[in-house]
Image (tube, rainbow, N blue to C red; front, side, top):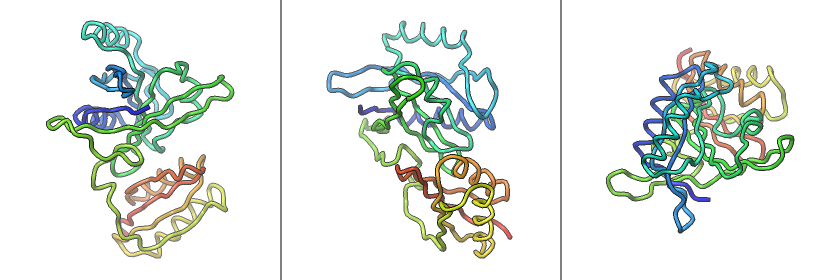
Length: 241
């Protein structure tokens, strides 16, 4: 399914999610399913995560009820929900898939793990013990022109989509944590301030832990690309010695 969201709504979600760090932020999305097969998000709701944690979320039930009433008043239909991943990529975790009980809904996930927020949409179906998540095409719409912008691996700020000069590349898919971070740290130590390291890294603990650890060391995670095969490309800018 193709899904559209206005640039202003993407910005609202992004700004709210960043203001709620280190906790996950969450909310609902509403709009219409058009006759041409496009799911059009016309309104986003920024709601409270009553869990107040960076690992999962529960939407405040009173706020959720108020949002549903507002959708009905505006002639909109509930399309699904959105939430943020403060430290991990923009794709459903095992917990996300377990809690995705509506196969008709779209689930938007905003990653704040890199310098620029990345937003992706997913459809989740199947029994609880064998849920499958499928990425949906997500397109950003300019508020003024109504024209579609680029949407490659989800929606990100334009600068994040541009190529940058990589100074060194390492592959750490053959090791496990904590050696993954050790190898990354050693590679960064060999670079000059401002240079960029590309890390080929596995899903699971490595992609969850290494970006967080390098940021704690003071370096900058520029981008995280999902290769779609259980691995990622992690781009790190060395900051300081």
